[in-house]
Structures are given as structure tokens and as C-alpha cells.
Length: 499
Image (cartoon, rainbow, N blue to C red; front, top):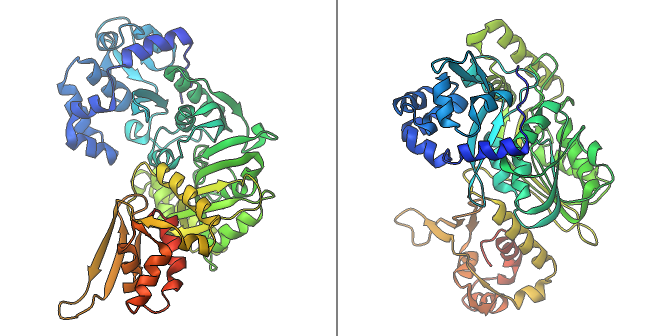
């Protein structure tokens, strides 16, 4: 594998200027919708054909060279990078050049592609070339680019202003770059020196300063405090005998790395500080939430916790997913695939692992007093993006509710959130509906089954009447024990369905 690219300040300015027209929208317009959908499936041919038809146009050349693994000519690169130049790209480790003739071939040594910045504009993020380009199984020190998990974490990260932020297991550095938009300073760590080199290149190209540190988990920041910790850790459960990669497994048995973060991340959180991360966890006979509860109890710093499990795979499905991700497929060697597959299943069976869950984790150190939030839920289906604002609002609603006793809640006026609808289902000949759903259009897209009393309460929340007045009116209309709806009302407020 080639060395990671390097870039100094002056060269970064030149390269950034050359890449400025090369945006996500420009690539989409160049290759068309069909090719964009194919790229989502890691199929490159439609995009290559469309980019080749555009000839020497710089956006087409850059896309072919760095994103699609195509070979272009020296003359084409010179036109696409007029300031940085072929020599600059070669010296930085971005390309390999054969000869000095205009027609000599040029091949990319890294993957480089545009990325939309939340605050507007474009970054260009470099990583190792993927299997779709090289046609080979990934190497152990592979540095991953911006993938699905990276985008998920970027979507759920809360973008409120903070003083100090930590990106734990930074990889190519994309989460640290995102954090730089709303943090005064950002520390980024990784056990992989190669990953830190890519992160340094990407930060230089973006014009962002990152404090990059090598080391395992929290060792490089022991004794420090952060207002925000984000982590897309190497959470993939990898048994002995299966292919191992630095970017996705941390060298601990089972789900040990996620368990360790649950237990230790609170030690580097400032009061009020939040940790947000993704993770996999093994599901045994006692269920996924029981294990998470145990992990939370290991923390020496009591933490608020909001954990959302988003997906579950059985042991065989999980093995197939991550073998395919690594390029270990039957077509490239049935014996090697079967051996690795067997290693996964034998390991899971030996330890009683029935399934593996995937989800998002939010942990918070209380400013004062003990924790008040422990919410563990399994929510499938599509969610709104970005999800960060939903989490910010959810924490704020929880904090307000935790200060309201029942009498104070009864004196509060509520309104129905603008994205909430009511759905009524039933057989045509029945006088009353069999099912009433209160559905959230944004956020997690929750659907709450309601009886006629709760549905009537929600329908009356127009901000004019207090909770107590609405419940009194429901009792007058014959709804028995209307005050017993208060826990359900609290739940609707905390989930953002009532405001």
C-alpha cells in the first residue's frame, strides 16, 4: 500500500483553488442520476462511462482519476490542476506518473472526493482506495473514507457551540472536521498512524487546525475534559481467524471496545459534556438493553444515557455483512470465505451470542446532582436527517420535564408539534376506530398507539388550555381516570410530539 499523502500550507492553498469547482452537485450533474444510484451500490461503470464522455473537462478528469479509479493522461491532469500541477500531486503522494509526455498515463494512489460542508461550501476528503476500485481485498491498515457509518454519526451529532471537542478514533478525520465548525478547539486521536496522516492531509486541505494524537482509546487525553466527544469507533466484532482491519475492529474480544467506552468516556467529559458514538453490541439471552444497563453501571462517573438500537442482525447475517465489507467473498476463494465464516459462527456460538445490534449512543455528564435520563429504545425505520436537532430538543424537553412535578405539568399549556398527525384505522362497519396512531413526521418518526382519551387530549393541545383543564374536560365528557394519562403526556413531550 502506498504512503499516506502529505500537504503543506502553500500547497494546500493551490490544491484547494484547483478543486473549488469540483463539488458534490457538479459530480452529480456530470454523471447523472443513474450513475449516482449505482455509486450508492458501489458500482462504478455507469459513472465512468458518463465521465469519459465529458472528455477533458476538469470535473470529469478529477472524478475519473480520484473517485472512479480510472487512468487519465498527464495533459488532462495538468489542465485539471493548473496551480498545483502534476508535479505537486505526485510529490504529495496523490498520483503515480509514468514519464513526461502529455499522453503518459496517470493513476491515483488515494481516493479523493468532494464532501458537502454543513455550514456551506465543500471539503475534499482523502482516504485509501476501496475494493470497488482496486478489485482486491482490503489491507489491514486500510484507512476508510466517508462511509455510511460516518454519515450517520455526522447526522446525529449535536451542532451546538462547545469549547473543546474530541474525535475518538478519527480515521480520515471527517468527524473532527465537522466538529471544528462548532468547537473552539478539536483533539482527534487514533491508534493508526496512517489514519492520522490522512487526517492531517484532510485538515490541511480544509484549512482547519486539528490537535492530532496517537494512542488507544482515552489514553492520549487522560486527565483532560471535553464538552463534546464524538466517536465512530472500530466497533466491528471480529473473532480470531477472521480478517482484521484497523479501521473497523479495535483488537478487543467481542464488543469490548464499545463496552470500554461506555465505562470510561465519562472520565473525560466536563460537567454538562456529551459523548455521541455509534456501536455494535452482542445480544444474549437476557436482551440487548440488559447488557447496556450493565455497561452504564460500570462508569465511575454517573451519566445520563439515551441509547437507540436501530438494527439487529443474526449471527450469520452479521458475519456475511462484514466479510463482504472486507472483500472476503466466495467468488475470490471459497475456502478462505468458508474458513472466515466458520470462525465467526463458532465464536458467536461459543459465547452464546444470538444476534448483534447496531445503534447510536448519547451519554451526558450531569452539571450537578445525579443522572435523570436513562432511555433505551429500539427504533427501526427511516429518520429525519440531520437528527442532531432532534436530540438537542429531546434533551431540552427532558430537562424541563425533570423539573416539573405533576402539579406543575397540570398548569402547563402544550401545543401539538407541527409534524404530528393522527391516523385512524378500523373496519368500515364499526362505529369506533380500532386503532389510533399519533405519528411524528420528523425526528425518529415515532408512532404512538393511543386510546380515545389520549387522542382527544392531543387534539385539544392548542396552547390555550392547560393540561389540567384539558384532562378535566375529558373527565366531564366521560373519560374515566383522565389524570392517569399524565405519564403518556410526559412521554409525548419528551419525544417532541407535544411542545
